[in-house]
Length: 237
Ligand SMILES: N[C@@H](CCC(=O)N[C@@H](CS)C(=O)NCC(=O)O)C(=O)O
Image 1: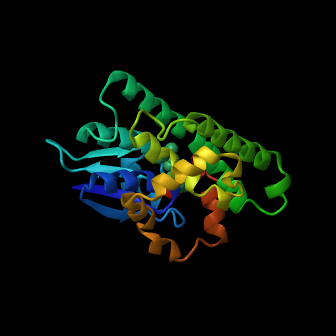
Image 2 (image 1 turned 180 degrees about the vertical axis):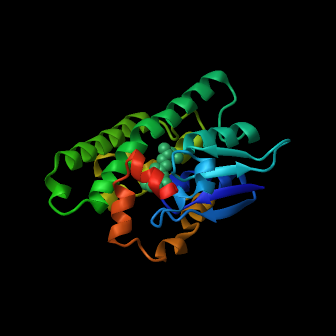
């Protein structure tokens, strides 16, 4: 059995998609990131970076194994079950390239753009240097995907893989973040193909109702969104 520390956001969906595709049994453990669950000592023991998703794999020979960072989790599970990742060295190398690209490029750029787009105070939002920088970087990343997907169905090789699963969630919500995919027809086609998979639909629906729980108040939001090493440590203690 796997414990899945989760909140319904794009980073959470990545791992939810793989768990559903692998049809693995798991226990969902909600991490309400709007309320600060990611700073509890129990959670910090699993992920010192206080972010979800995290899994704890109990289906191992010794002590349960915690895994943090979505890319590491996807690689760990695909490797362990020998699925959704090519087995030949070149295919594995390409899968890792697109996995690392997601967690080093698309993920952070889309995440910061989402923050400015959804949470920045008025004024900062449309005109600020930061807003424009992350908006353009997110757009650039969509262009990288467009070039890669021109003339190919999936990101790596001939088959749907963890490279597609990890990149898809931040593309799913492109329009909602003010960047419709009109300029990126191949990305739009690929987005629809992934979205049509039953496992993907189950993953995106996972824990939807959790989001309806009370949103953070102003003080909580300020603490959560203005983290420094000190404030994060204070919250954890
Ligand atoms: N690089 C991390 C990013 C994870 C991440 O940023 N998770 C967000 C939710 S989408 C989170 O837990 N945020 C909590 C916070 O900001 O304190 C991964 O890919 O796992």
